Amino acid sequence: DKTYLIDNSYENLLVNESDNLLKLEFLSNSYYHLGQFYETEGNIKKSEIFLLKCLSLTERLVNETKTDESLKNLISCYTALGNICRIQRKYQKAKIYLRKGISVGEQLLKEAKNVNTKRTLLGIYDCFSEFYRNKMNLYGAEKYRMKCLTLCKQLVEETETVVERRNLMINYVGLGYLYSLHGKKKKSEKYLLNALVLNKQLLDETSNVEFKHDLSSTYKLLGSLYRDCKILDKSEKFYKEAILLDEQLVTSCSVQARQALADSYTMLGDLYDDKNDEQNAIDFYFKGYNIRDKLVEEIGSVKSYEDLADSCFKIGYIGESKFYLNKALDIFNTLSRNSSIFPYIINIKMIKKMLKDLDS
Image (cartoon, rainbow, N blue to C red):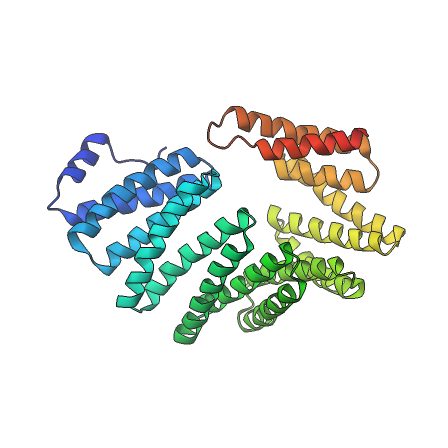
């Protein structure tokens, strides 16, 4: 709350000074950034409040100025509100905001085909694709992910920047993951391999650590894809490539890097289990377990409890698995009681089912 330093009297003064557009623009931008801040903090209700304030002022600025900049700000606001509603599973409201943003963005693109307009429109296409993916609507998710891909390719041709090439790579991954969810293995493989080639180029050119994280994630997706296809040797190869990168990245001691390495070990353990290689499966399950056990002690998050419960189950520690699932359940129940917006019902049901399965 310390970030919100505009008192009510000053806020009202700014809103009522219709002749001072610079002050209104400043206030609108402040609302937008506060909305984004509260979203990252997990305070969805406050995020929505500030984004609605931003929308009100931005619509007013658009009516009074009709500049490209005010229109792009309007699109960004619609995108952010659509995303907030999607998180809350208010799908109808999310769709309305996103459609409004796309309508403004596509009209603006016809009039001003510049890089910034394309980047703004890319953001809302991406959000709409995720909206449809959450609803398991392959057609809608694919449609808007392809629109993203078209804009990404145009931006790469026009700018040739590392940022735009990474966006293109991320969209290849997004399509690969989307198709894998819906069982379209060949299409999934095509886009994941495209991502892999581009990712390796970017890593060779920049040595940026972020590209190592990206590459590890793509290796895991390919490993999982080939495992689903029963091409186990290929799957093993990609999981091992992911582990090599994750073992380099874990030297940073970040939670993210250690979680990623534990995930890689566990995935490879699952693969060896598929191959009936019990000893290797147990070895890698224990490697994942050892990391996850330490993470629970340090952070005690829902994910850390769920991950450790999974590891305990795989190495035969059934009692411990139930213990950590109950820990995760306690957190979700607390979150549910404290939130009228996002009740975590699906998470709670899933954990209760897992506990019931363990009991049987």
